Length: 266
Image 1 (tube, rainbow, N blue to C red):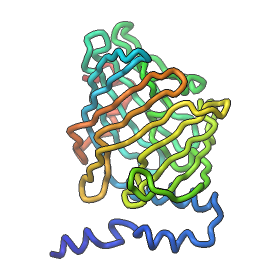
Image 2: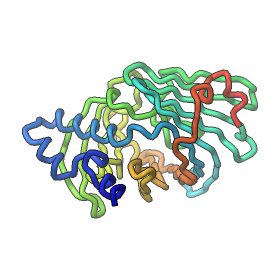
Image 3: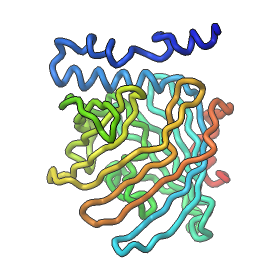
């Protein structure tokens, strides 16, 4: 009963939507947008590290598809952005390809790729962050951790999305060489996690929409989706990511995210 009471405590779960509405009273749209982003970040802080398996399905405008399997690992970094590593297992022509990201709050993320066919590690230049990751509809900049300081925010409205009460928040990249002028996110008021994000290109035209579904809660705190779907409205290509086997606090070390270890990532 004590454990149940603790789990139900606002101190652990964070303020209820009603309590947050009171806290937001009197804020202008920019302050409220930032407060929503900070609350979402606070809710997701403390997972320490995480591993998961991922299935990526690429579909072209004719409906033809190809599939890739990979493994992901992520480690929280105090006072900076998270570190993450993705390793492809299939198909054979990309097996062993690895992507390492050291995210930062305000400075440009550091990203490297190991290409086994060339047996070399390639650094991803800041100017190329808007490029596609492994032929998918996800850009390199989509793969770094979404630090609060990377964006300016503006609350637009509250509305229901597929029956879920949401905050609709617009955010603008503060870092150089982004492929986006702005993003509009629908944040579930209960989970404080995104259900949908619209991405606008440098001409401010709608480029892509990402949707998230199948959320499950881990360690009584952290929400993770089982499915992410990105549709490119301009090319009509899409990418679906299916997640499984989430594991938390598995004891990952900083050396597991060392650039020199990319060639040995298996």
